Length: 373
Image 1 (cartoon, rainbow, N blue to C red):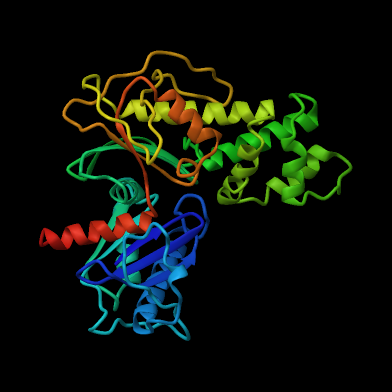
Image 2: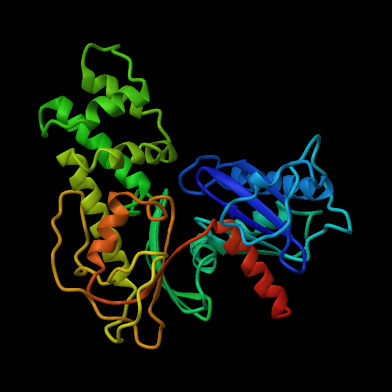
């Protein structure tokens, strides 16, 4: 079983020995850094998603083929759970190993998070392996165990992998210290721009009206800025991140939104450059039907108001030139993805777009079993 603990949802998939999908579960968002609830809330979400996947496996055929994700590698239709999910897995469907991929499960809190998840999955599986979300995103699309990941979703991080193991990471520090170029960062910059517009400190932008409307800001105080403050005070980081699509939707014609998107793209490439060593050669770039170049920017950190220019860094010696783009911001066409691809035009690597992270978690579980671990 693979479980992806995400900021907006938690997904579980149970497969058999051939990789055929037996059941899928869905629970609420529980990103450890951005969705609230802390480790206890995350553990509850993991348990719920796992139980739903088991219930679906025990009630096959109750959902149509349309419920299987289009990019799922599995070939068996799964059923939606009905009634109360089981607390203890039956022998028939008891998973041999569960891999939970979670943002926030890095070295800083790994032991604490892993213990909570193992406790939460008591009765479902005795072998629980906890990975960070980078590994699952990379494994969902990588053709091998070596390469790079650039992820921008609720958070943002870049990583270098060798043998499927994360060797180096940049950013992914959480929204207080970093995550520059993430969906949360984009939404935050949009709110700051709207506040500056209302306050007369910044340029006029279409974002102001769009964000005020989206948030349902009420004219309570008589001061539009203070009304916005009242509303924003109640937002969680994940809710701020949910505003990113509004910024990206108007980035093509609104100068302020366009600048935010451009800065996000530059910040993400800077993070990728931070995990690349100063050696290497060129490879081939393939991004589905689109052929682009891959390169980077200088190592200057990007602040909300920074302009970044410079020569791209070289490639890491000994690492095949493959980069996986992942996360909601980089997995779909939008100005930030376009900016990243445009900036990465001097080096030529193979570029792939990540599938659902839960698929990567399943593949890691399969890898562990294949290795006898």
